[in-house]
Length: 176
Image 1: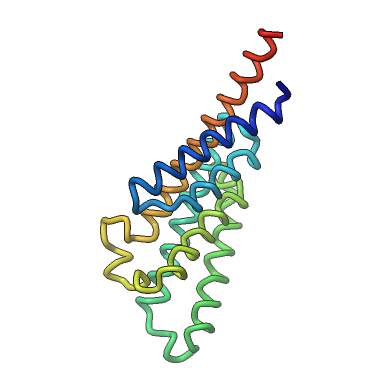
Image 2: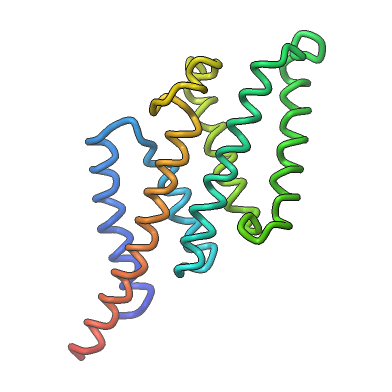
């Protein structure tokens, strides 16, 4: 079996299982898991990629969470309009994500932006959760918690699918 065929089979099987699991458990975001899963492979598909994906997805989600809290907690939307104030906060936090890449642990900028974007995707698809009480709650309604958890699980599924793909390829080579 080719590497592509083995990896495709592995990802298909585990993708189906992950979908069943996330929909059964509820509260976690299958789409965020798939974003992190893809990020793992984009980052190299190895142990270092897993670390970079976990750290940077979580960092990006955390920066986006801070941005959401700042947008809501500081009343500058009244002066600048909400789009204007949000643009200023995004400018500053996006700059921060990029500059943080000077720290080796945060050097995988795309992974950080996947976490950042996924956090705001969650908030924009669930506007009722875009309030300070929910953003500071220790629940899966908190955008940071649910996004970081979902993406962490997705990165782990990426790692497992890569390993399983390698096992399938090796097994097929031994059988030939």
